[in-house]
Length: 235
Image (cartoon, rainbow, N blue to C red; front, side):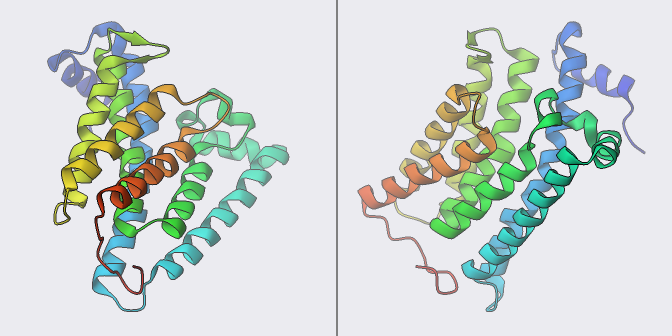
């Protein structure tokens, strides 16, 4: 049995969310909750590398690249064919930001960013950077809208602290068996948080958060001299 809006509102009030904030929180839950489907990519990627011999980084890049290209074509059809645009608005328009209705939406940039991360970075770094976006960004938005008091631009200090905490835990779990895991995790988490906080409006953070945080983690592993494990021909 699903949770209806009244039950969700009651639950949010129970955990201290202000009454005036509840409609925004529910809207954000619906929109950002959809992004959790993006977890399929890092999960399949890691499981494939760990438990199969045929699934390599190259295979992952080809699959993600193909999906990204197909989604790009879909988006171009949505933006340029009125009937297609009307269909998409009816199907998932409520989960799109207003600005995404007449330009490429965040899903494409997530797919593109994931493809770039898988191609250029070690699997552990790529997976961590994707988790920063999927779960960390969600946490920042939810906590910021629900409890944010201290504003930093159009974001909040509370949301940023929550994002850093979640990102640090996620990346520490990912790098748990590696030397200096806590340091790599810290720099990855802080970079993702700062990127989310100060990301310019003209570029989608679904692209900048994973790519830039991956660059920082790659630099820190090199700086600390950490040798990451080999996965199916990926050193």
